[in-house]
Length: 355
Image 1 (cartoon, one colour):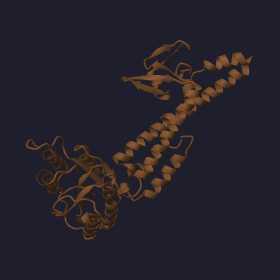
Image 2 (tube, one colour):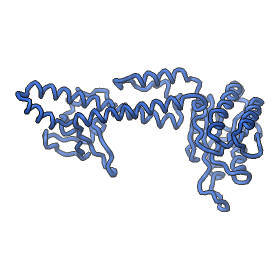
Image 3 (cartoon, one colour):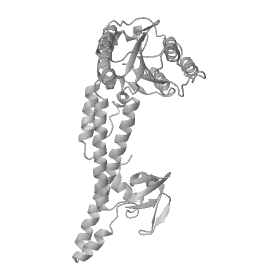
Image 4 (tube, helix red, strand yellow):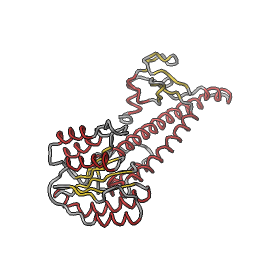
């Protein structure tokens, strides 16, 4: 494998220039901040493709895991000491039974097996905490938590500022926590800009404590279709070292599309624009971005292998002896130094492949 510079230079072998304009077409690597294009021999190209396919299989396995059970609704809880803030205002009334069912699933799927210490706080006109302190996820505590969850009722307004202030006071005065998980279907009673500013003031490192970082606030948009409300929840998470997740009950279509994407071996299938809003969580979007990148790399590998096969066929037909054929095969490289760089050639070979 040879490495070529990313700069615009004349390629000696074909006497043509290769510029950054076609950077995304060729296999490349970042070496100390500099993008270098790769020239791959056929056996290296085959190995590269096999490794990309293995990575893509792992990505799909991870995506299936993220889209199952409580992770589809609440994402993955990554903290070991958490306070769960549950919006039970009047706007949650259509979804309250669904919410209670999914919270019970969350307790058994994530708190219990992962040994996450937890506590619940419901809020509407006011807030109400379940226990005075965090509890260990024992069977008894999990059963009691679910019994408390079953009593939740939706009514009143959304006192987001007061419940967040209480969460910070709980952390500083009662018991330290690693993360806050804020579950809501919309905007707070106050203006969103006001609440964001108040949270910035509240979520500071106290000079009289041993804290070295701010509390992570993770937000879950629960059955919310309001673009502004979702943007607020996303901003609240991103400004406070947290992750944003958008819950969905459209799992059948998402799983069906992921299956089609996984079965597409030509790597021509594009993302379904109708499903993109449903895949708006930070974890899913990061993984989806890597899947798209891996599929692009595989598409490139297939294209270059096809070019090699065409060139190899030409060489074999013109070779007069086995010795000549072997010598020529060894010099074949796939990469910018061996591919014509005229715009007409590029458009003919790769229309719509790398957009």
